[in-house]
Length: 457
Ligand code: SF4
Image (cartoon, rainbow, N blue to C red; front, side, top):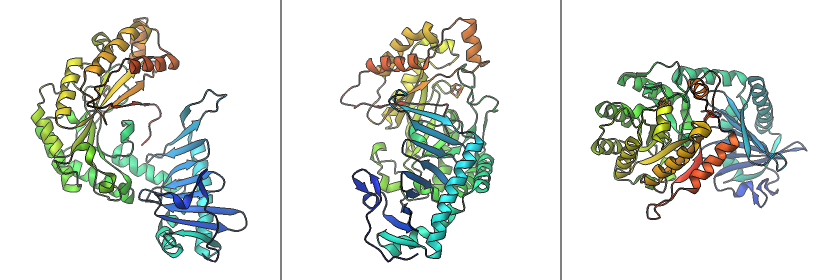
């Protein structure tokens, strides 16, 4: 690499901003390669990114794994399990918004090959001195030194490496069926496998998975394997998510043992730190610090849990809990074969909030079709308004997907239930949102969509 022309214009990040002005990139190197190719190679606390002119960005994690390929109106995200998800902005003629689709394997292989060709081209020119460094941050020599090892790793990321990584992922996790959208960046650790109940008609997430709890020693081995697999990329992960479906419903004494194991391996916020008070500068960049532990929980398996037990778990690191309310309508819950009661959910949320544990409540859009729609909207809004939700909590709206032959499908046909279209589900979400009233002293929770179909980890 040469650095003979250190006074070129910085490549653009947004219309008004050069890449060298992006504060998230403390390290950056702008290269001119031959007559036609200019690229800005940026290193942040979370990733290495190659910005090409015009409008192509290749993102790699801190282990050199391709994680995202972005163009102007669409991007492909590669999950640790090796699957690719395409997110595409729709034009005004197409109706606006975005669509997400899982990418077929041959297309995924093409994406990997194309990305590798581009990154290898940059790496080769960088290594053999053909690349001219136009800009460097904090300086050209320092940026080159910091970027070189990761650029070499990224240039070696091909279909074989991707397949090997996917196999490793499968060996450690089996699979990760779903996470709440605000936990996509979590380090997942599985205390249990499957769902202890697995009887809700609308849920196929854990079908065929025999429920079991790991022993403490197995859990330790799982942690060690996961930590090794994630490697340097752990520096970018914010929280720990305890899988699978309802790990938190294990007896409190058992759970405490698992939390003690977590505390052997990781540093979690001190008990006195308010949940919302953990700043990113505390965990970002550290491979063993996380801003708390999160998990799903059903509100029916353990009806006698006490607030003292939640306090103990919070002291050991629990900071966020996600509960599937699905609906506030008791008749609909019964029809869905969800054993939870509205009172049970209310009691759980009340106790969690007393302990300064954030809560995410999930609502199932379209459940029970047109026949249940009016009661679903009315009762769900009523219950959500009664819950002591506050700023930084979440209400998620998750659209129902019905598969031919599923338990829900059979039940709906038997009871002549008319399904809601996607537009009608969206309308239902708007109706619930419009009926929500939050106590201004507590603040408003986030309202967000929760799409299970296009989840990848
Ligand atoms: S919705 Fe939750 S409790 Fe019901 S089967 Fe699925 S994972 Fe289990």
